[in-house]
Image (cartoon, rainbow, N blue to C red):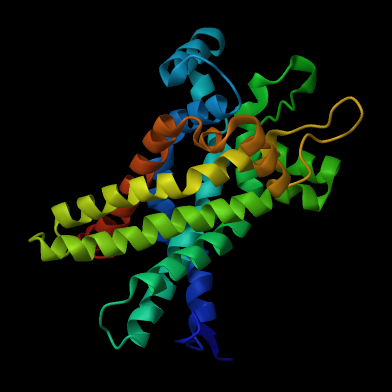
Length: 309
């Protein structure tokens, strides 16, 4: 059955098959690229979360203290959940975006796709991908935040499998989607900034002399996209972190009733810049990850062609 995309882009009958392929981790390039990026960025993500949860001393101080008190491996706590998150969320969002953007190109007769359509493709891909990846994202955040809690409040998940099982057992299936709203909104903002900016930047770089598909064109577009993704998504990431790590008080009451309540209380207590707590660390975490992922995505088809795949 045909539908419509962005109000005017027709959806071909084969889109369901194409989107299904984009959600199949082992055979899709985005899974491999995101897995490589995650292995590099995981320690930075850990420090980012700890800063958002109130650890003092700056990024280097937090990292140094964690290594001193918990060992170097503490920086990689939650890596299994991080890899699962990338296998679901990143595979879905990049695969869906590639399909939606291709459909937009076809709708525009093979010509230039307007920026608003690129942004809309990024929003849709981010939101859908985040729904797929929310359970793994929740596990990752809780595993990273666990050691910052008092000993009697720690969950002590043994790994991502144990985390998923215990969340379902203790909180029900719905518990896997705790913080889903800010997670989805964050992903939509991040993807709009990352994917739309990447495409637009590469087109602009062609006009200043960097050949389409060249290393300079790909890297330049990816770096600009990484910064845009960071700036667009951090406020939503801050709210997501607060919601996913919260626990009820002695009376069984949660500190926040939802994303809007968290945002209002944060704004009242710390002002608008509170949402940008840890921005330098977040930029170092998001921008390289986005850059590496986009560069790997651009390069992988060439590698596959050279290997005859």
